Image (cartoon, rainbow, N blue to C red; front, side, top):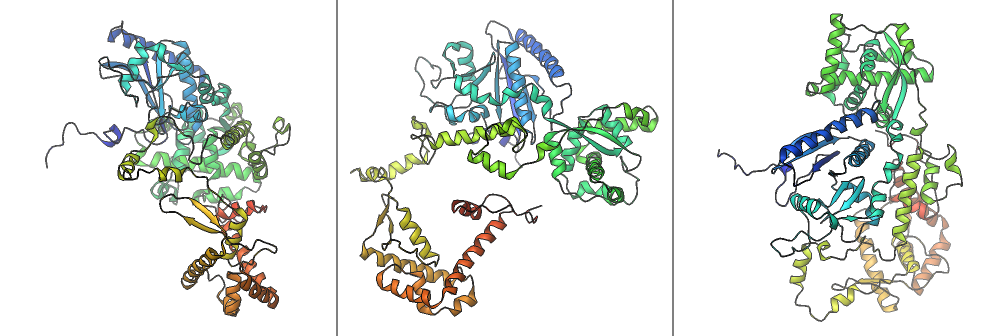
Length: 620
């Protein structure tokens, strides 16, 4: 086999057509010290001072904080002849960790006004995504890379024009990193400060630094004394254990299936009650998981009769099992937390570490936080979405979730209302002014359609869509086999789509009406032959042929008389049709498992709100 080309790049490194992307749930941040008068050695010295300031800032700000998966970290690197600081954090399911990193970087930029910071995650320029509703039209995803920079606590944007190359201004387009750094370093006055964009992008930072501790949860759990000793040394170990429990697989569960305590790091013996600290995301993951207690734990958990004691025992069992999976899984042997826990357990075995006594345990903090933030009142949730919130309700504990969740929901609803009230916004979203937003395929389409020069196609695309709601509803009732509404219109709409213009038109001509009915009958016939409309075979067999045709058609004069005769003959048949429709709607609603879906949406439009299905059908 031939040796690979030295220029080969793996997918994560990026190549033409497939740019470099970050792993899932990761945020990357780079810090540059730009001063052309300094040598590279002097620049590195300045960057080391920034590193020291980062360490001091995080020690003060994150003294009692727990990261969900990885913490904030930066290292000194050199690339393309330039030294800089770079860091990457996997924040897992905790989006708050990502915004905490943004807060740290903003505070750092205030301490060092000469540094320039770039932040991006898996989605790209997520700060611009956060401020999408106030962005200028030219700042679209195709040109956004490397344009957003954080300096001295402010967000600055590189304008659309590229730096001049050999005296000739380049065509507007996406920037490279080197081009952006050149503008930032040499043409700082050209950078744009957009207050509206900055306010939207930093909206979530208003809750910091208080949010740092608000994102934690303390709970009283019953766990082995040995595990209590480990967690007292470093409470952050819980995040790794929760992650192992939440992402468990059959191989990780094998150690828990043992019939005795041999080989277990934390056997369910010598149990004590202690306060354990979690991230809110981690606690919710642990709480929501349905997990049958292993044989060694089952007897102890079931012995707890009181609900509160049983809940503490069950949560303690989950935490202990998570630590057991973490320690026994071979793929975790390089994990820093695993190595440190192994050293603590070795100290206990050799006598260098002493387990806490009952007297010492009483001196530990026994904090237990309220779990109300886990509860969601779905009626209040719908009121929030509909804007039907009671005045002053936010001052108390009414509503769903915590105050932050309520604020985020109100902001989301307000943005949606602004979009709906924006007359300039179309069904396809925001319209940009520059030609770069058009897909490359449009050029091919223009070339293929260049033979059309009379402008008829453009005129067709500009026509307004005409739509009669009553006529459409009447036709849908006919297609579903339902009788028409009394006193309804005698005309039936005709929907025709022109092959070139793609324009929807409605016509009520009697000549076209018959053609529509014939086409609908052909469709109905094919669907019935395929069994798609055979909702109740026995009931359908009882219908006379003339009545089935009447129910399916019933809009022209002769057919209306036949329909009236069929209705007078048997009202129960119409009731059966309505019963089948209601039955299918209810089955559709039940299959949603409590989530959104077509059945629930149709019922809401008809003014019917059904209670949530609590039978547990959708539970995993």
